[in-house]
Length: 170
Image (cartoon, rainbow, N blue to C red; front, side, top):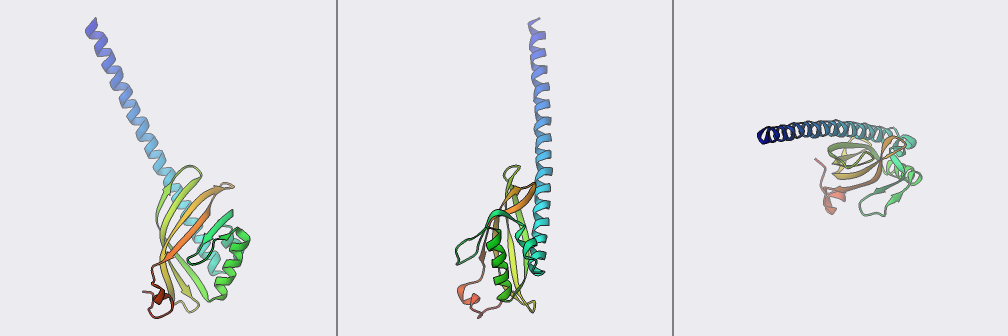
């Protein structure tokens, strides 16, 4: 009888462990699918961002940001809110910038409503000549059911002398 109880307990423990492993595996698989969905959504928003900039569609460009979003450019104070972000777009276009190319490297999904993206960028002037390149990091938040940039910061790979025009972007 004692042996039967031990066999039953061991069998139950093995069954529970197997079920737990399947549940954990299932959760991990579901998380990976969710992470891929977030990554795909963020990449689509990046396309909207690049297209909106290139077409000078300030509304399309600014809608990629949360209402209280910030752009944190190098050597400049933060630009806060969609209205100021629209003004920033106009200013950068007036300076001759014509195109932004983003290449997302990694998206870290933190929760159902936050994620962090890292990547590289390249900026082009009117004639298609590259003028700057570097790295960026965006803190994404879900707002109104859509992923939007909450904080956007970037850093140039170019040295200060490169930025003064003595060296060219590759």
